[in-house]
Image (cartoon, rainbow, N blue to C red):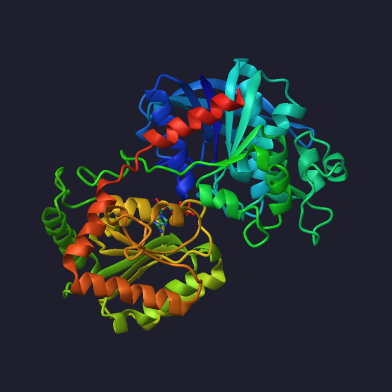
Amino acid sequence: MRIVQISTEFAPLAKAGGMGEVVVGLARELSLLGHKVDVIIPKYDFIDLKKLSQLKLEIADFKCVEKGQLYANAIWSALCEGCQLHLLEARHPAGYFYRGKIYGCDDDTQRFLYFCKAALEYLKLKGEEIDILHLHDWHSAACAILARDLFQLKIRSILLTLHNVEYQGKCATWDLDAIGLPGVKYLTENKLKDDDPANPKTLNLLKGGLVYADGINTVSKSYAKEILTPQMGFHLDKTLRKLKHKLTGILNGIDLQLWDPTQDPHLPVHFPPSFSIEEAYATKEKIRAHLGKTLGIDLAKRPWVGAITRLAFQKGPEFLEAAIERSAYWGVTFLLLGSAPNPKIQARFDALKKKYQGKPQIFLHFEYDEALAHQIYGALDFILIPSHFEPCGLTQLIGMHYGVVPIARATGGLKDTIFDCEDPSIPTPVRNGFLFSEPTFDAMDQTIQRALKVFREDKPRFQNLILAGLKTDYSWEKPTQEYLKLYNSLL
Ligand code: ADP
């Protein structure tokens, strides 16, 4: 099969969250199976090109029109993670991909609409037949509209993967006009009209992707059901219910090359391949000693609880704040590695950091730091994930692969991958963590206390939870088979 993925992330070169890992994990696995996979991403200024051996200029100059003006672009290509990676260099005067970051600019919709259009110009130039055009979230959703209404490309089928329905790419009709699509027409025909009644004149790129794609999938089965409800559909639930016949859910894997505790280059010591509980714990102790030395974290014998997360509403930042405040009462060492896209939320965490300055049993760090994330996974006993909603969630999977027991809210992909220690409907060897259903502090507090009781008073049971996580196959093998089945059904 010839598969082209268009994405705004590709881990670890350009990663903001889970999506970048999904794109690379799936691409690598499909390539291994002999499929021809091309991935197109923007050539961001921060990409470390030294990591791409044999990077070559594939097309030195091709044009893309925006607002009636012709702009130059180039394509750089390299074999990367088994697939052909194409970096689209937009030589646009607005410096669309020279911002030092992927998301969070005022002109994100214009930046990614331009990227979609230029990516399709490139595919048109190549003129090859494509079996599956695989798009991810709103950022590349417009490719489905462009491919069908503006470009006559030989694309047999289009799949749109929803990593997060909260972000939808809302824009004005003139933003579509700018890339040569009739914005007003899409508004009046309702194909792209935002479903939120408060925005009667706004277009919604994710909705356009849903309408134009031949298939849609989310990254877990539970989330595929949840987004059909007004509580979790972010106003797209009505459209999604109408398109339910083409919606499925495929659980993410984790990229076992990025996340390999036996040879993770970010860890000061590696977990042994056999991975017995004793050895795992001896390794954790060494990683903690390293963190104690480098970050000044207290090494007194206490359970280590932590979170590695964007501090966005979705992730339940108020629960993480409460957990930090309560960590002394619970008698745990608490580590949080996170960053808040919202300055108000960040300010609250900054205040907490100030309050707990000098308390070595609380470590709060607000940055995106890949190496530190790996070390924290290596060191934790528990990972706390109190999400309001969670399309799949990778941190529980990575955690379990590094011998960490998750404590999480029972929602979306968390519900599909974490099986409570005390759930009688789940066979004991499959139980791997702790879940709470109600999004309340009390529910979280009780569940954490329940988890700590097992940790402190029932070691064999706790170790079984760790073993269940360690033994589970989180690789991309199974999800890739499911994607192939889905691709085939679309063809
Ligand atoms: P998201 O909704 O952000 O995509 P996921 O759980 O699917 O959430 O994936 C989050 C990914 O981003 C994980 O690989 C996690 O380790 C990583 N991550 C989140 N925050 C940070 C951070 N501050 N520093 C380093 N890695 C982070």
